[in-house]
Length: 363
Image (cartoon, rainbow, N blue to C red; front, side, top):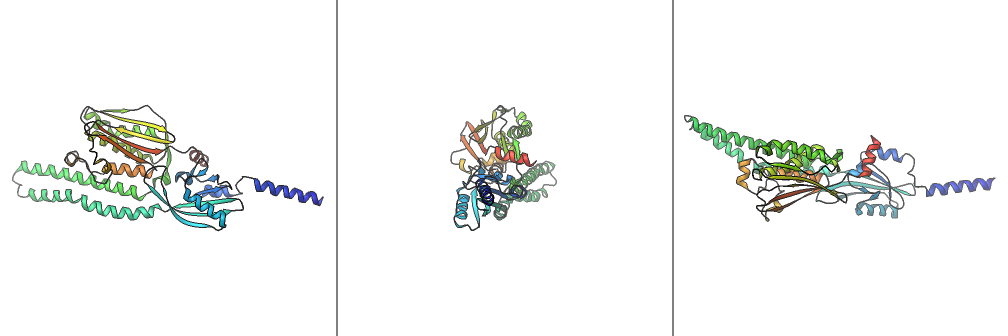
């Protein structure tokens, strides 16, 4: 009987050693933490991951995406000692945006490894935003403020000439509107640089975002007899912030309207290929010189300074689009030919089915 009992215990231990189940209680802990958390089995397969791990793009098809984290896991398996290190990773599968993570890796029992990652990107962005805000606002606000000051001085000697007063007052109102728009867009751009929109990302249908952006531009397009042509509905799902993505698409359409002739056509289309969503806005406008094309996303850059003044452009619209897209793990590209028009293409990762299922379970 004693021998049978020992054999039974050894058999139970062998089953436990080969089981792929996550240790008791770990599931609940991973679901509860705000950090990106995941558990790896001996083959480095992800057997459990929090929603933040998918949001940050650390996991795809139940495997780790970044070799930097793979290296930390291998080190922990080799030495048995926990590792705590700050690493910088690409925000998404393409694009230039980065995410700064404080990563801790440790053993979980004899078979598993747990990885916890906290986002430290905000602290980096805060310093960058402070520098950019001071530099941009001091440079760009000088022009409208100086213009308003000069016009105010010119009003006093022209007080006996109603026509001159009306002319100066109209120009002051134009400069004040421009000043207000610049201030609003600088604040919006600074907010984009200082926050992580993906920390509160939701699963969104891109068709709805396009529809909202087109609705916001219909009045301006109709006034100039333009056609906003939207391709068929694709029902493509992405993860992100609906308000910011609508702002980005709205800015692209408004930009196309601003730089296109009356009666022209603006096309908005969506394409999905191998997990990459492409949203393109094509116009029949004046085009962008080849030398200027790499600079169109810079803050306050204007291809046609005189036209921007006449239309009230601030040079911040495309920069805001770039930051919105980068904050969603994507990138934006521009193609143009003088006299024939331009195409701006936003590329974003398709929503992860694994992440969506996990979020659905939590709800």
